[in-house]
Image (cartoon, rainbow, N blue to C red; front, side):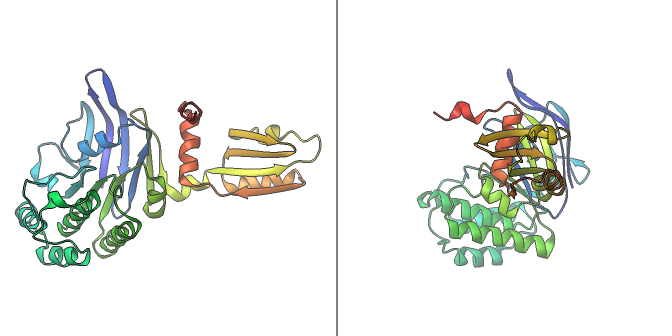
Length: 300
């Protein structure tokens, strides 16, 4: 289990993380989402022991991380921009990781390179960004670590390779309880694979929840009420994120579970109502706007 307790980190006058606390359970896919500059990459680097937090405590299985090689052997970091030694090939990178991770499976590594059509003796400098990312993913899988940190892992991968990488992660979770932690802007990708989500904003955690609970906790409803019915009064006990009206049709985004929202709507005996599903992207925008990050200012 990964546990972050009251983590803060500053770079000069910039507060990258402010009092962040998160629990990441084993054998789950944890997604880190957030606005630009929210602190996702900084948090990943603290988890990897690259940065030391200014305040708080970061632990893996009850042990601190920074300057602890024995703890660092439990994870593999896949950065957004992968670094490889000059003149390195996939084969030589495999030999290198074999010296770092005692359980590195060189035989499987070679097999996966072939499955992904990556030439073992070709210089990695000639690879595309997506091919370099594939090498990193394969090395991470074959290191047989307990945790894999993924910073924009799907960036640069084509749709087929994205599915292949997801399948690899799913297989490892099923066979040996792998725990991937994924920081990404691609909410659609995270929606497909994540069990739990942590939402960062301006260096702090706005929410941390299972994806199912998150989706069930916010509803969008379209309703045509009877004449004289005050919709907002009917939902006065709930937080209304947004209320849009087009003629007699009202569309509300409400904080509350679907059954309760539906019960209220039904009790109004409206002309028409319908509960609409919300994507993770819509939930993210709703939560961001409710905390002062207005998307309207970004759209010209």
